[in-house]
Length: 234
Image 1 (cartoon, helix red, strand yellow):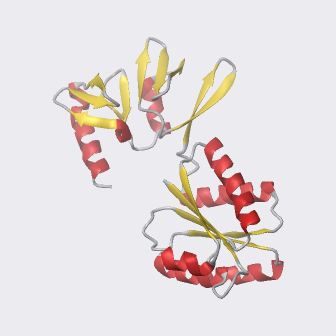
Image 2 (cartoon, helix red, strand yellow):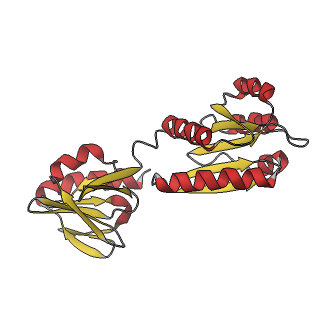
Image 3 (cartoon, rainbow, N blue to C red):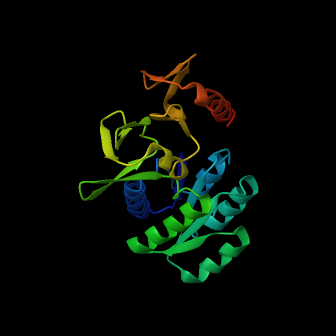
């Protein structure tokens, strides 16, 4: 999951930024956790750098610990975190080179600018490519986050994407899906392709996915076992 941190001593700016980020990531199908800090001191005290994917929006001018100070601390712990500065003072943005900041956003916020910088951050983390699956259905395009999809199955000329809430049907071939899916999706049968994130049990000739029993073909059994072992080692 993507972790987004907003650190700003002005509450109204934290609220505005969180609203835009939360809504946009939801529309793009990217699950996230957004944390707010009202001071650089609080952020430095709690930041551990143990998370895999982090985007940080740091106000440059705060109290005794500025956004730049916090960025220096973060960069020592986490060389891969994406740092974005927010400021009302354009002259400060050049200090971002020291901590390899991706970009900056000026206050008051412009939503288009936020979206542009957020997309750049996702591209840097390589998240935007594998976040959603798009289905063409009756002249409209549906967007499903990969996290929601439990498995795909084929039936004649139709494919079905099964989620906990409902099943979405569309035209296509199961074999053509593989190239557009993340590694957590594995073929188990001529008619079934499952999401390992929803795999409950691996049995002799079947699997349980979200409490449903699905058949495993002999020709796919070995590749499924290897993929599942790699998944567990992540």
